Length: 180
Image (cartoon, rainbow, N blue to C red; front, side, top):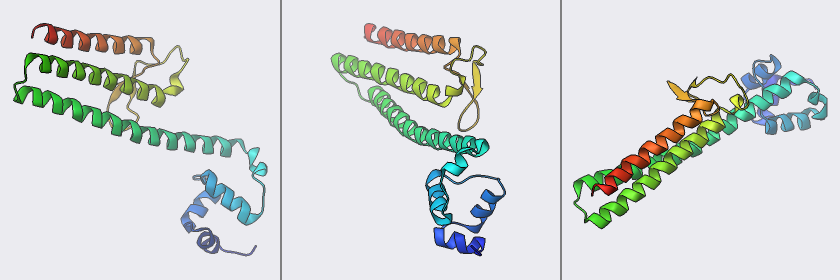
């Protein structure tokens, strides 16, 4: 074609560095960009279907994109739930409600706390799905985002830990309601 990387990058609204990295195998384009490139250069995507390394890399990139989307969704939901729980707990300690109102708010806190734990568990299952079916899956795994460790939900003890947490929360809330 006789065009420079800069010419191609300008026409496809990409950076020259991106094209260079793709040519050197340092990273790979996403699917929409790959389609644009195939249209630009006039080749079928079927020709790269046989490239196992590229297919694995594209699949890995999409899994990372989906993981980041899920992280954003779950983080927002969990944060909102946590803020609601904290506001309710603070308002219950500041304001003196009647016993029926306090019992009702405590039950709402119990439900929200249970939902918070279940959503956290669901997110962990999504993040650590690579361990699904692995008999030797570790109980403690590195957090998917940030620093620290997390419980692996695919380890048999991970499920029991969740059940114990829910039982403890229900017991504490039940005891609180009973003692009012």
